[in-house]
Image (spheres, rainbow, N blue to C red):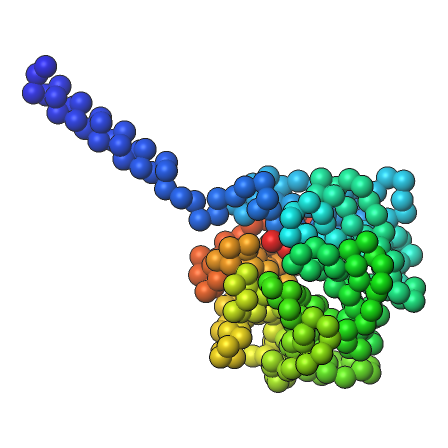
Length: 319
């Protein structure tokens, strides 16, 4: 072998080794079939459906489609069960959508086996969330916009509904199931534009309610970090539109993660707690799309581009 050929062989081997090293570098957004983001989207003509997408933006798939054999035309606010086998959501028919009435439904993770869970007193039900052990469902009863909504819990089969708080919305379980964080006016009555909405936490049986924030504007849509140490939420506390914030529960320290003229809302932690997904109308045509960032607000990237399609959007993610 000539000296030149020997040099070329060494260079080639070095390039192959470098390429191999690049291939095995871990992808921070690598995913498994269980690591999918749920969201809802308008799907013309005149319906809303549940979709899933991988954290790297691939694998967009529609799970529901007008629910053949039922009157349901709208599915929103979906929530994963902890074992990723079932999905809760709020469903409407045409009349319910116009009147902001809805019921809670559950489907299997592939979109099949639709079941309705009973709502108490035939009042509208919203914002369902599984308990960490999937044995209970947390939900809101009443019209949120009229500030007469209450937080309830029921068994996963829809039985034994009971009231935990006479007012509240957007409840979320702590990872150990011992506490529930939620948003509330702190009172019942008619909500007026500009009234503050704050974050609260209570024990899972409804006792020992404590206020976490006391700010002007809205502080809402909390989601608990998997390690139980932090809440992520959206707020208008700094004036103007909604932005994403985190709160350290042991210190009360609040950190702002986004700063944009558009509205950033409905944040949710990734299963490993390292990333946050949210929806924002900062994209196309004023429609909302999904965005992902690290838990400190860095590495922001756009996940969906449905707003570019006329009448489409992506909202209410759950990871």
